[in-house]
Image (tube, rainbow, N blue to C red; front, side, top):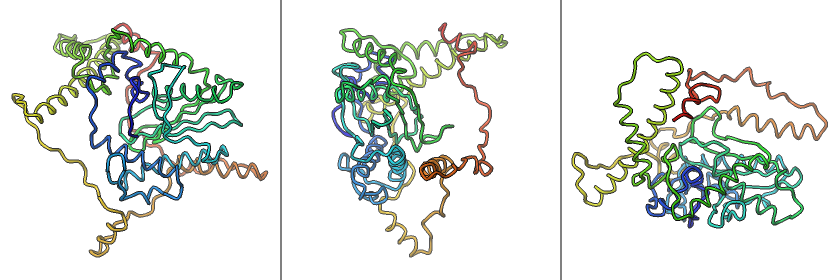
Length: 398
């Protein structure tokens, strides 16, 4: 949601944990709001509004304006938010934690685990004292796939453990069970829209130490910059010398003579090198293109280039019942047919039923009862990194 960001923002941990110079560079080139970021902020507002007051529902929020940016809530924002809301409420029901114990959009300063300039606002978290389990949710409205054990989530966990330790000095925070989730309805991947990562807090010690050391380096006079896949999320990548060097090297490599017949080890090395080169060029191109658009918008003449307004997919801008009335007057049914819940949602609901059956002393229902009705079609073979292959060994030599 809206609000001032920390110099070491948890939301940018994915970048500065790799490039200590990012916070300083980003402060020189602040990121401007886009329609996509505003829509994401509005969908976050639906989540926090409903979880803060269950008299609201995602559907009842359609047509209302997000007070932070005046974006009108549409059906897509509400439906995406509902997935997050349903999962949070489902977990609270399973662990028997009431809403009063749920922390929603509460800012935290991550001291002393990381740094006094490190902070952020987790979307939602709850600690179950009975099972010593921390449940953390991060809601993403965008399309870019984010893992459940993201650096942002790890950074939040570090701060929450500080809070729990201060609240009860007798608690062993390193023995706490941690469940990190990413709820991302519009990201299409093998794991589905809700990704989960479970561990014990002690498993994250090395990650916390890396966050701490990078944070300490970031506030020095010369933190240095480092290029990589994280450049994609840096608003200063168009002005970054490391990004420029990486892209230039990639172009030089792409234009060099490459043998057409490669050994297995040579192929491994080539794949790893090209993967890095492709990303370097991609991030640099995106940054320079954005810089060119901004300059032309301000009156600059960039030879050979101009700008024009793009348009996205059409969306309704009024409540669903109002749109449906218009359609009905024309003899058009504006609603989709009823849809089945997903296999993942079936598993969650069955878990709730089995919990009650167990409490009643009844036999549990095997979730495989529906497996006969579920297919998971293959999307074809795809190349993936492996810690066991020569490709990774070649990659490490770069």
